Length: 230
Ligand SMILES: [Fe+2]
Image (cartoon, rainbow, N blue to C red; front, side, top):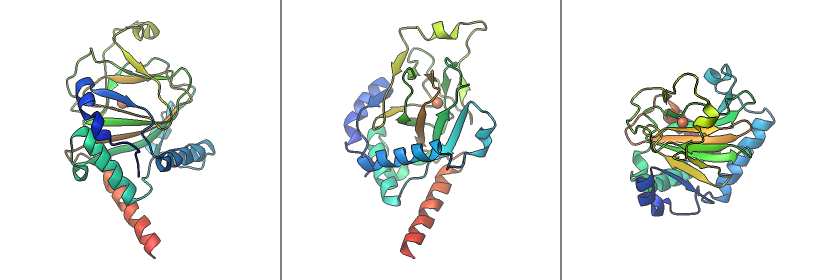
């Protein structure tokens, strides 16, 4: 099982706040899977997603769900908190991001691509000073684009001061926790990210799979199942 709590209990709170930090909700199995990824990344045993290798600021790795049963339980529980049926959920993105030393400390906030109706962050490791920040006071107009969209910040703005605004909600989190928010309709960003590693699962119920990562997930689970049956 993926979670130790029925996430549906937090559905109305998520509807009210639009972002939520849930503590200690992951099963031991899920935590073990995340820790295993953390070790493999640290030991350089995993292949990065090619398109991101060039950027240098962060490394991204594709996350595979351990089994079809795990994925089904995951989708059912995430369906409960998002108001969707588990079988309607498309996993539009499943990336582990690892932030390098040259990642910006205070980047401009962004909205995720449209396929991220909900973005769910699962910390693997969070650097001491790192925080995920939400901007409920900025525009909530959906990003309908195929790429992330950044807020316009006037040139010359001191970005460290920019983040001192009391209206910005900052959260830390740890392994075992999850963040869930409307990725394509609320501005958010991670500050002082260097050294952090987070699994991001972005879901929707509109069949949006722009990177083909839902399709490739189902294929990889099928071949896992075939291999274990053989
Ligand atoms: Fe994002």
